[in-house]
Length: 98
Image (cartoon, rainbow, N blue to C red; front, side):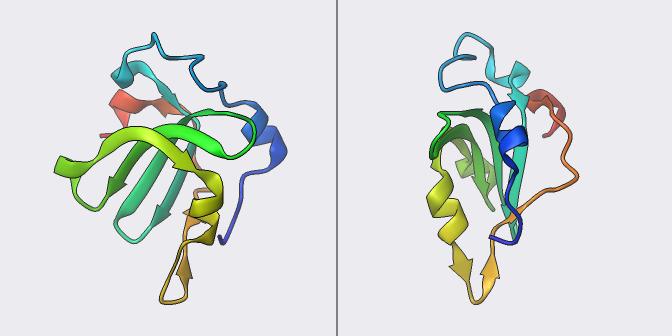
């Protein structure tokens, strides 16, 4: 992974299930990871390795919410290109991203 979020950024993300009663469009997306046309938008974190967020792997019709492994994101490598962390991402409502 080219860049990784620092512990301070990770600590600001709600824990898993803390926002389960928040409608998906209203969830705050705290982190953004990307590679090529693939994007992962992070809304919750278990504090160890599991994120909850929205993954669009290049096909918006097949994109979905679910658990995302931080260690798997960090290990992805496509022909020498690694997943990157968006250093300039500002938290925003999911509904404002689409």
